Length: 63
Image: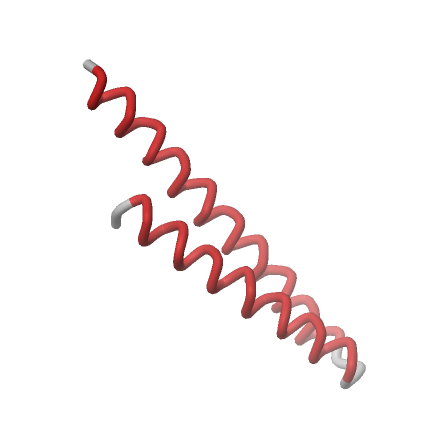
């Protein structure tokens, strides 16, 4: 997967996680809130991976 794809998927997961958290809070469902937190963290990790890949590519391109 490319860096841009990782970042896009990460943002999508982060957004979906936020929606799940809000829905879980509104419906008083702690399990759904927890799923949202986990999905948000997954999205953050995917974005970080994409940024890391981008940084590596820039270093390789300079070499």
